[in-house]
Image (cartoon, rainbow, N blue to C red; front, side, top):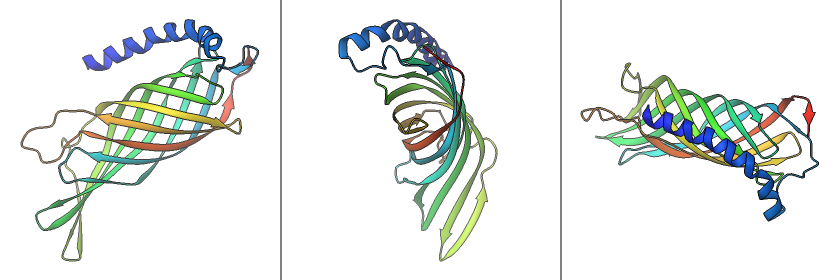
Length: 216
């Protein structure tokens, strides 16, 4: 929790720094949003998200899983804003155990809090924290051409905090594609073979379906 509060403090301190430095960025590199460009302070966008996230197990390898996100963005200026919302984030990976092949499917509802910086009209850079609320998990065991589904008991997988770095590209005015690097660190009991730690990539695309009134 102390790490989470430290990140939050860093984000809010950074807001003022980037907001004050937005004009300087434009002057130095001449790549920032146009000084005469209008923008919306509030934006709502949603879309699908593909995850390739692996647990920190020695023999595990990630599997593709499809989720969805809905985000709300608040811009302090043309170049700096905050992003939060909700995402449905399934994680799937496989590993060998004895003579069996095991697949884990873990589902979370995630709540991000990102600082968003627009160094150019098209490019966005996000970084921040993400709270992952555990929904359910299941283990699928493949043994001698037989599939066995087992639901994980409560307490094995837990709620956790993670960190995300994102780079994205805006196109066709209402669309935004992005790539995330996401990692979660949470201590699990030594006697427990499963882990709450994970890291990996996410690829997504959103459509902006609502904007507030434009302003300069």
